[in-house]
Length: 244
Image 1: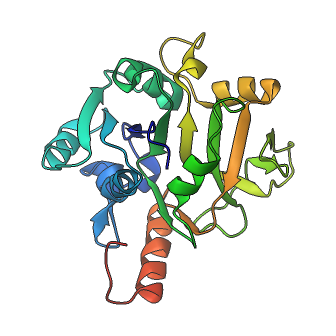
Image 2: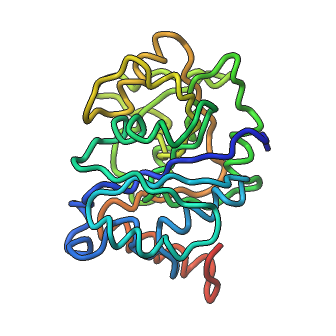
């Protein structure tokens, strides 16, 4: 595990509209899967990976998130409130003064994954190559993801370089919402809301965007049906066991 990957940002500002009515009074990151809140699952994984400081951006029902995470001892939590929703790219850019000048983790707060034979974040850290990469995305099989109905996002060659899915085609890999990113990638990006896809498109042209395929399970917790599917899987696979 790289000793320099000590900081992360967990994206937790969204409204979770597709998860309603569950998210009418509960922010999506605080929805429970396997008896534990989604954001705590993500923070647990980051802590295991050696992260000591996690920035959490907030907007919708942000006071509830701050109250909950204020009780957490590790990693250290720093909040990055957003007056307006800044989307993924804008949220990371807004938090850059807190993230520092070294590469950092970016994790969607609703990303829920199980490790395979090896720890996913440890695998990513082991292949991270600052000389050749500006971003490294964790990918998962499009057809084997739980709760996912899209066409996927990328194809990937033997050394991990990525290409976008062609229009109307199905790509073999989807992006899981887990990545390593250099702070320099946010230079010359829009002010205000924008998607991290703006950065990915630029890095694709420069051949600096890479991916690694997850060897465990990944769940799309985007709707109540997706949540139910994840819960059913966990009860079937790990009956009577909680908090993996």
